[in-house]
Image 1 (cartoon, protein in one colour):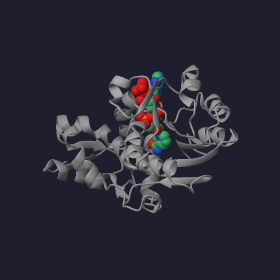
Image 2 (cartoon, helix red, strand yellow):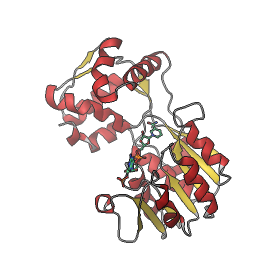
Image 3 (spheres, helix red, strand yellow):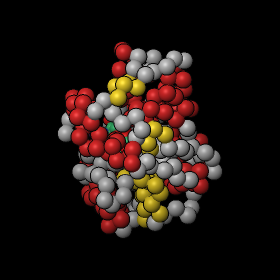
Image 4 (cartoon, helix red, strand yellow):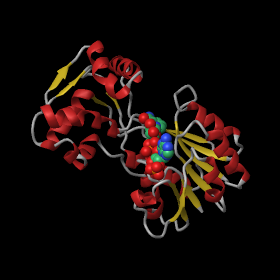
Length: 266
Ligand SMILES: NC(=O)c1ccc[n+]([C@@H]2O[C@H](COP(=O)([O-])OP(=O)(O)OC[C@H]3O[C@@H](n4cnc5c(N)ncnc54)[C@H](OP(=O)(O)O)[C@@H]3O)[C@@H](O)[C@H]2O)c1
């Protein structure tokens, strides 16, 4: 039995699909909202959430492997319960030890259960933060058009998780996952424009202006996010071959992602 936690979530729901596509027959999904998750009928559904640890013992019964969604607050209790229930392998979505997500990796390792860490870079879906302004003004107002990183599609994170859960040889490994190419913010906006069939101008803001624009949606993290953008001008994130090595296929390009999600920008 493979348990997928956060199964209504953006990544978890896709992990369920990739597990089934890989031929897994015993898949259990932990979700607060089975009706929203629209899970395939062959999936065993348990109602619950990683934050409500009392829902975990029933979900963990008979489970051999699990996908762990990133929730730091209860990760120690959850991984302790997993160890007690006899889970043999946890595949977590987290991040390097010195990152925001590091405490999740530490707790998983200290539980004593065999692990695989998926350290995903920024998600392509984060560019949906431009969707409102593209829809309403036809342009993007943002800082640092030359800031470059190798964003990854959520579906590729899920595909990588399914490989680690269904194939041997991945325990004790931390996989840093990126998309297949490093692109600047200006290039991403250009590709969204291509998908839309029109040019989307990039109106460059100063650092301080960008922080102010982001503050309503990101609060205290706006400053941190814009500082990160500035850093990626001088030190662009490189694309890594990890996804291709794990899955045997190239990762989703930003152009493909933009075409697939174009209606959200129209
Ligand atoms: N590099 C990165 O950007 C990076 C790296 C690692 C992780 N992450 C994080 O990874 C996550 C991926 O998103 P995801 O949607 O797959 O997973 P998620 O945010 O962990 O959410 C999964 C599910 O958990 C439940 N849930 C979450 N918060 C809840 C709350 N406060 N109360 C009750 N239930 C709650 C919801 O289930 P129901 O729908 O069933 O209620 C949700 O669908 C994001 O949070 C992202 O920030 C990002």
